[in-house]
Image (tube, rainbow, N blue to C red; front, top):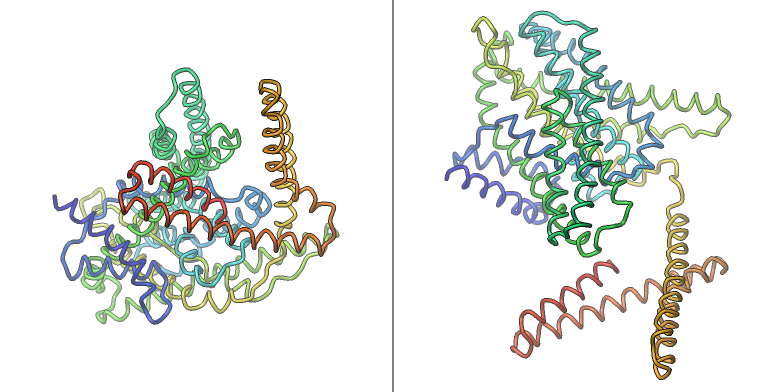
Length: 546
C-alpha cells in the first residue's frame, strides 16, 4: 500500500509542478521544480522510494526512447548523422578518458577504474531537460535535432563504457579487444532486435486484423507494449535494450507510412502517448529529487574518503567536474565544426563559420538527467573479496551534483545564448508543405470526381444536380491550393492571410457550436450520449485547425 501512496504522491507532484512553474514570479525550468518537489517528498514527508535501477530502466527508458525514435525527424537525423555520431560516440569516449583522469587527479583515493565509471555514467545527455529549459526561448530546430539524435545513441555508449569500467574495478583487469567486440555486439544486436521485433509485431497485428478484426483500442495498446518487448528481448540476448527501443521507434515511424490505421485511432493514440510522455518525464525528475537527501547524507559520511574533512570539498569536486565536462564538450564541438568547415571548403561547397554563441549553446546543452542517476545507482555494494566498493557513496553524490549543476548552468546560460540565434537554414519547410498540400489536393479532387461518377451511375435523374453541386463545393475546398501554385507572390501571400482568417472564423464557429451543445445538455434537452458524440466531432475538427 505504501508503494501505491508514493506513486500517487509522485504523480501529484508532476501535476503540481506544471502549475507551480507558472505561478513563480521568476522563470525556472520545469525539471528543477520537479526535482525540488521530489526532495520535499523524501526529506520533509519521509516518503521517499528506494530506486531499483533495473526496474527504473525497464519502466521508464523503453517507452520514452521509443517515442523519441518514433517522432524525431528522420531527414534531420540522416543529414546531420556525422555531427550526431561524433557527439554520441567520439565525445563519450573522450569524456570517459578525459574526465576519468580529471576525477582521479582531483580525488586520488578514488581508484582510476571507479573514476572512469563515474565519467562514463555522466557522459549521456538528457534532451528532455534541455527541451524543458528552452520551452520559453525556442531552440533552433536543427540544433534540437542534433541534441535529440545524440541522446538517442550516447545512452548506450555511456552505459557500455560504464559496465566495462565497473567490471575493471571489480576484477582488476580490462581487455580493449573484448570491450570493442562486446560493444559491437551490444550495438548491432540491439538495433537488429528493435527493427525485427517491430516489423514482426506490425505484420502479425495486420494479419490478425485483416482475418479476424480487432478491438478499437488494440493498436494503441500494442504500440505501448512494443518498446518493452524490444527492450526485454535485447536484454535477454545481452544486447542493448536502449538501442533496441530506439530502433523500434524509428522502425515504427516507417511502418506508419502504410497509412492503414484509422484516423480516430491515430488521434487517440497521440493523446495517450502524450500523457505517457508527460507522466514518465515528470516522475523521472521527481525520483531524482527523492534520491537527493539520501545521496547527500551518504556523501557527507564518506567525505573523508577524499582525504578532506571539510564537506565543502564536495562542492569543489562537483564544480570542477562540471567545468571539466563543459570544456571537453566545448573543445570537441569546436574541433568537429572546424573539421566540417574544412571538409566543405575542400569539396568546394560554401560553408559558414559557426557563431561563437552556437558553440557555447551546444556545450551548455549537454545536460545530464535521470539515466545518469539510475546508472550510478547500479554500482555494486561489495567487491568479490567482501570489502566495500571504493568511494561508492561519493560517486553517487558527484553524479547527482553533476545533474543538478548542469541543469542550473543550462537554465541560466541557454536562454540568453539562444535568443536570436540562427543556424544554417534547413530545407524550406514552407516549400515542402506547399508541395505536400498540392499533391494531396490533386489526389483529393481526383477521388471526389471518381466517387461523383460512381454515385451518378447509381443515382436517379432527380438527384444528379444534388450530387454535382456537392462535388463542386468539396472540390472548391482543395482547388485554391492548386491555384496558389500558379499565382504571384502577392496573391499567394493574400491566400495565406485568407486561410488564417478562415481558420480563426472556423475556430470561433466551433466554439459556438460546442457551447450550444453543452447548454442543451445542461438543461437535459439532449442526452449525455448525444452531446458527447457531437462534442467529440467538434473537438476533432478543432484539433485539425489547431
